Amino acid sequence: MKFTKICLFMMFLSAAQSIVSGRAAAAPAARMGRVNVSLPAAAGDLVTVVYSARLDNGRVVVPARGAGQQEMVLAGKQAGFPMLGQTVIGMKKGAVKSLTVPPAQGFGNRDPGRIKTFPLRQEISPTEQMPIDEVKTRFGQQPKPGLEVRILPFFKSRITKINGKTVTFRHLAKNGSEIKTPIGKTSVTLVKGKIVLVLRPEIGAPFFQQGKRGVISGADDKGFTVDFNNPLAGKTITLKLKVIKIRQKALLAAVGPITWQKDLKTGRAQAKNRHKPLFLLLYADWCPWCKKLKSEVLTDVRLRMLRDDFVWVELNSGKEKRYQKEFRQNGFPLIVLLDENGQPVARIDGFKNAAFLSRGLLGWLQSRPQG
Image 1 (cartoon, rainbow, N blue to C red):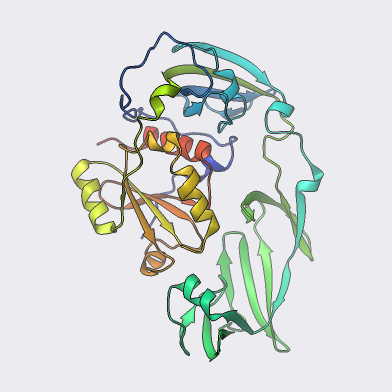
Image 2 (cartoon, rainbow, N blue to C red):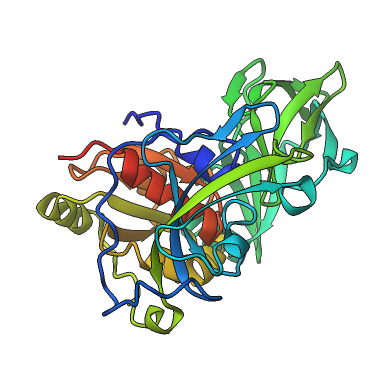
């Protein structure tokens, strides 16, 4: 199944990415009763803005073409782009403002301590032990000798023995093989009873560690460096914004929760019948980032405001592993966006906060072809 290359990830991972603009998506409807449009935005109000941003040297980091980048902002709170949450307070619908955002109020100064070095070469034992309960939770299956699962991304591992509450795996590493990964190619060799993995990193590739995103910035014959600084760190930014809608805080409680389907076939049928895209969440019970996404992000009012713009489906692919294969899932959580015909068109790997996720979904709704 081939995914169309929509640069959705970039809307979430950095404000430095360019946003494709197009026809505005159907705005999350007037779902909360009457709104007093004459009142300026106050703390806690939900304010929809369009904005653009450029650096001192004139380089555009958020383009102004079309309708501009759209974002729902909780006034007074952190937004996807710095200073938006504070700036909208006191602005009325239709108001326009331009301001300079220094590094201290933007993406901070560059920190040399956020540039990390990692080894190119790693040695691992050909066998690995794991508690039987962890195997059941992680792979959603009853352990038995001969069962093959993927503990590491490079090769499968086979259960060779179960002793009480401990399961022993043997890694099925093939000597001389080479595996392509998102951060480069990894060669596999067997040396003196060890499995040796050697990475040839791809400069510029994104690199994730403990929920943080960096970029591979260099390499030598021993290791590679990853820069975890934001690409806009140390930059002064000129921000221009316009308020296009204000929803008062008192009315936000009326926005209901997202209604989730638990069956993909049903969700695809609803998407086709309703002519709406499908938001698919693949999660696992044991995954803490999945729990955080479900309890804190997908309950946020900025996501709930989009509840009528998608058909929402959640699947426990930690147990129903056929979905991992169907959607080429390599980690948890995974969000896949499907068109109204049920075909995947974009994916979002890993945890994203509510500000970035809602902004990215709005941008995608704006840019997607309309039927």
